[in-house]
Length: 85
Image (cartoon, rainbow, N blue to C red; front, top):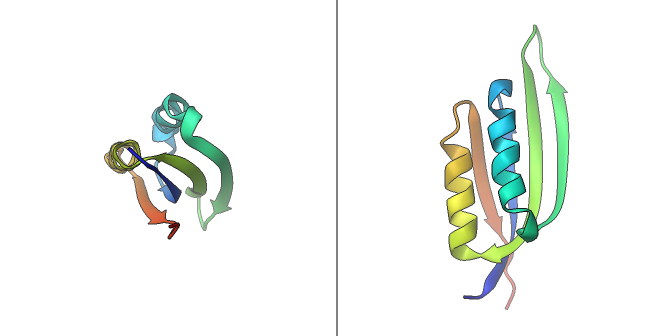
């Protein structure tokens, strides 16, 4: 199966889910090209984290990872595919 180049955007609202998120990313580290994370301090005590992951992986790996991340409480993810021919 051909690899796809993607950007996986992740928004973390629930900090208690970060260890599981990191485990999922670590399990797929062979596909990760780069990672950037930024905390965003909002009003009050809540904190939001914005993470972008550049990946090159087979379609099924990308879909599975994004789906598993999206099932975590308080975390959402979206995949943007590169148009490479």
